[in-house]
Length: 144
Image 1 (cartoon, rainbow, N blue to C red):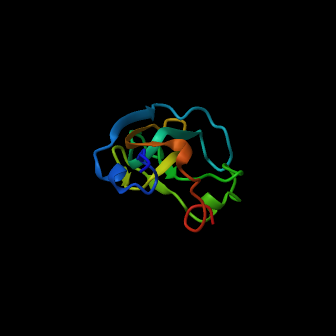
Image 2 (image 1 turned 60 degrees about the vertical axis):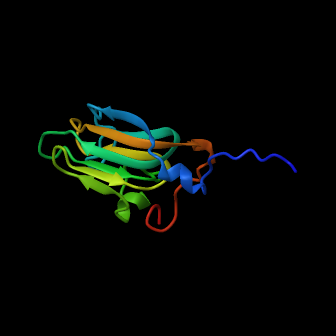
């Protein structure tokens, strides 16, 4: 009988049932204006492993310092033709300490500041599944 080498994978239920490894990050200044239509900087956050949960917290304190959180971005990130923006496939956090938790498996998210003062924190729970095993999130509700 051949020995089996079991390891965590995308369909491995146990990888999502156990507590995840902590992962923390953020940005205190989304930077100078880089686009049009009032958009500022956009951060592409890539996790080293597949996340089982991601919380994003708006740390901006001023009026208009909103941030957008999304799972994909179009090739026209700052233009109205971006399907993610056009079809509102994002969540907007408007007030200081507004937060959202996504209990989804993903390898990346995008955070876009709507002002130069926008800032955020991210708390993620990572599985032991390498990010390279995760497929790209796209389709209905994400990019279409």
